[in-house]
Length: 66
Image 1: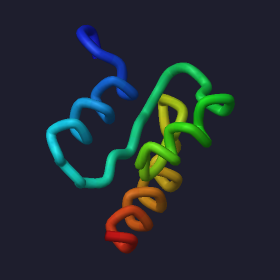
Image 2: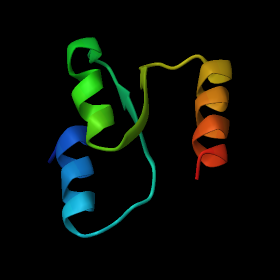
Image 3: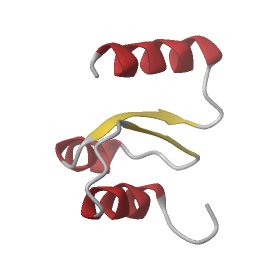
Image 4: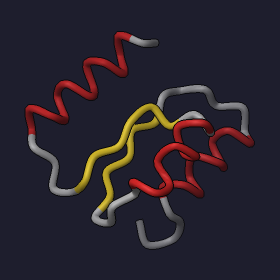
């Protein structure tokens, strides 16, 4: 996103009291940051471009966990 990162968006949503699950797609590996992001409420993450089967599984799991 040109104006804010996915992490900043996650924080802004939480600051507004929004509790919907967030799945990030990033062109940059987040392995070092992933544990912290999940602790902040991130539902899942995939590297861009995602494999469609992986994306479908992640979305299905995220919806099932709601």
